[in-house]
Length: 105
Image (tube, rainbow, N blue to C red; front, side, top):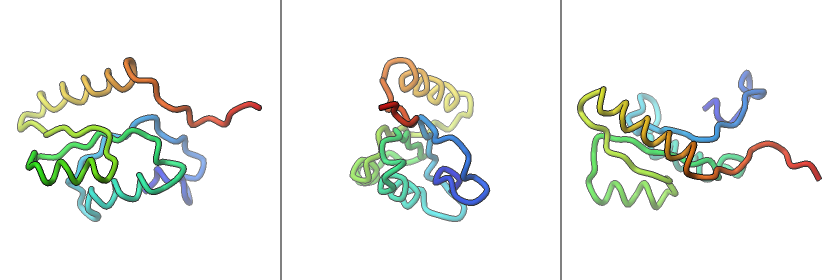
């Protein structure tokens, strides 16, 4: 996970927003969400979770793990791109996100 800024990623910036597709090849997307939201330096980053299922128990699990937004992935790529764009627009222009830069005291 490069977002934890370890190893060769140690100098990378902390993201302001994460889009997380739960369909991951090596690790469960729910496990990734759990790790991100339990890591002190990352827990304030909003995470938009995308998956192909909108089964109520699954959606509840995402919010129980502190996912900030759930979106069901549409079947068409062009529709998915519109969803991502709308979500990005909301999180980048409507919402005030926490700064990850050190505060000057």
